[in-house]
Amino acid sequence: MSFTVFLGNLPTWVTADDIKGWLAAEDLVADSIKVIRNHETQESKGFAFVEAPTTEEMQAIIRRFDRAPLEGKLLRANPAQPAKGKTAGVVAAAPSRDHQQPRRRAKRAKEKEQARSAFATELAKAL
Image (cartoon, rainbow, N blue to C red; front, side, top):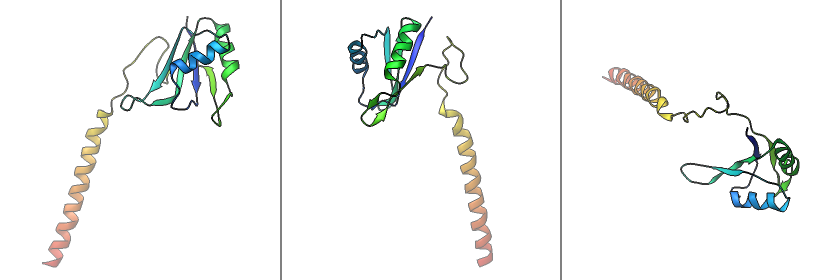
């Protein structure tokens, strides 16, 4: 069973090692820490997931870090929820943006056609 804590509102400079150090300073234990990063830039997205070994440890991490101040912000810590549309234990591929391309192309083609028609109408008036 997994006891995962969502740790949010983190500054972009925070690394897994930073979080590990914070936990160690509080005598808290984590099985793993994953700072979520932008795939293209590798910059932190400002949140992380901390895997605790027990429900008690998970609750202790949440109590310690929820609403803790850091650089003028308040951290958020709560039990992690499965992503919307996903069930626990099932990993789905990230949605592709390619599905938007045909709609965009069709919309652009329609806009071009309308612009040509308007231009042709105005040209016919002028002739």
